[in-house]
Image (cartoon, rainbow, N blue to C red; front, side):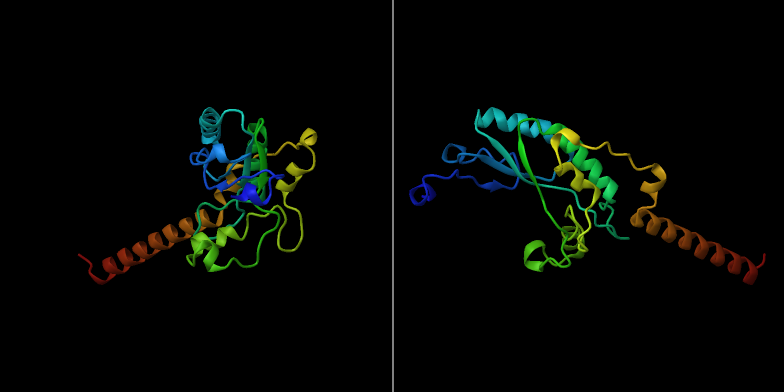
Length: 193
């Protein structure tokens, strides 16, 4: 029906995953989908989709990587990690057009959008290529020029281990160890045998 109101512009639907993007492809001018799965599965999904839709143009209308980090969210990453993600994705796109989600971080995301659970809602605030202060993140450099994509230095194992989640796990384990040691010490002191 959309074509009846505007026969001059291309029509598409932003499917939530490439495995569903072939649905209604015969009614669409551009096959569009979102992609948030691991990068190592990207080529497989795209090849499968291309077999189903033939020569129709593909548009990855949403993809990205959140820089949200917290003590309770193991999936968070640094701006360097986000830049690594964009670096790898840029090299994998081939003839697939893509749009990053999203331009800027948000100070708040309504619960109606991502739900009220903090591990679902909070990461949604940090997908931007620009932070809430208007400062460009490293990943923004992947939208300057396709001919001038920068090299990304990988995070060291030390930097990865300093993720707040892993620091929290270490502190909890350390506190449990100290509590057990104190308990054993006082138990031996109060009940000498």
